[in-house]
Image (cartoon, chains in turn purple, green):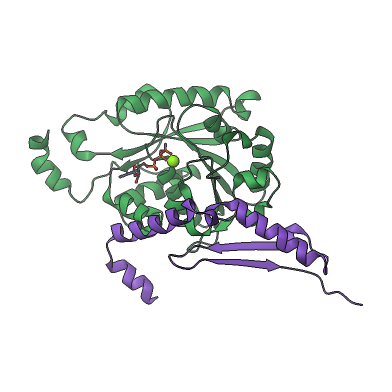
Amino acid sequence: MKMFALRKRRKTSDVARERIQILLAHERGVIGSSDLIATLRNEILVAVAKYVPVEIDQVDVKMDRGATLSTLQIDIEFPVISR
Amino acid sequence: MGQVLVVTSGKGGVGKTTSTAALGAALAQGGQSVVLVDFDVGLRNLDLVMGAERRVVFDLINVIQDRAKLSQALIRDKRLDNLCLLPASQTRDKDALTEDGVARVIEELQSNFDWVICDSPAGIGRGAVLAMQHADIAAIVTNPEISSVRDSDRIIGLLDAKTEKAKIGEHVAKHLLITRYDETRANSGDMLQIDDVLDILSIPLLGIVPESQEVLRASNLGSPVTICSPKSVPALAYSDAARRLNGEVLEMIIPAEKNRLLGKLFGRRAA
Ligand SMILES: Nc1ncnc2c1ncn2[C@@H]1O[C@H](COP(=O)(O)OP(=O)(O)OP(=O)(O)O)[C@@H](O)[C@H]1O
Ligand SMILES: [Mg+2]
């Protein structure tokens, strides 16, 4: 919430500059391509699938690109396996 | 089944993406579920206008090519949880957008949302035709100037010829959305009159959105104007337009910005 208050006082052009800089930094680099994310997801899925039965639509990939740090969050749902 | 609205224009840069974001947000603010679909393959911008550019993982073409499920590609708005975005692809080539693929995605979206709003690319090419393909309603974004009116006329022709509705002998409901209306220039007589534009295109008026600083601020912040400054003149114009899309009959207000007095005082000299 503090961030929000801070943002409100800033000029909107400053916000715009920061947003476009972060975006372009990513789009110009490899991390910007959604292919990379799809590849990562598929390879992680293959690795997990060796041990547990998972389907592609049980994999949820979320991305948050930041100025200095980005996060890639991969959630995989899989059933309880009884032996 | 949800309704499909295409936001189109022919001419570039008239305010389609801005209007898609604002109308979508306004409909969602009214309580309906809304998905915005960016058809501008290679030049997507709706993600930026919606402030979702950092969160794009998959896009429309990934879904069409079965590389991602629709649910994985939809980005839920952080401010309104009944508003989603399906981004366009930024890199891949335009031919990846197939007629069958688009049909399948739109149908699936229609069964999950009250409104499916398609942000058309400029031009009258394949991209624009695909964006309007499944439309029930069209918002034809037009600036009060001759080249924009001419291009809108072309688009009206396409809507009557190339859409699924046209192919089965029905009509897409066409509405005119006038944007970037400049009161100062209107008063000085240098802008096409709204009546004249309506006369020429002869389709009903959905709204008149003024040229406004608030629209630029909203785009800088990545927030539709109806969310970022809901009391502003352009936001009210978009909110009323959204209500008209739902069949409400409202008095049309010709927008006047706060600088109206200034415009009146200096209008003559500026002209
Ligand atoms: N009512 C308005 N007042 C002021 N600026 C506006 C208004 N509507 C749109 N703009 C500005 O005009 C520019 C073009 O708008 P927008 O991107 O929405 O057009 P578009 O029709 O989607 O363009 P394209 O054909 O390239 O997709 C943007 O910079 C936007 O901020
Ligand atoms: Mg656009």
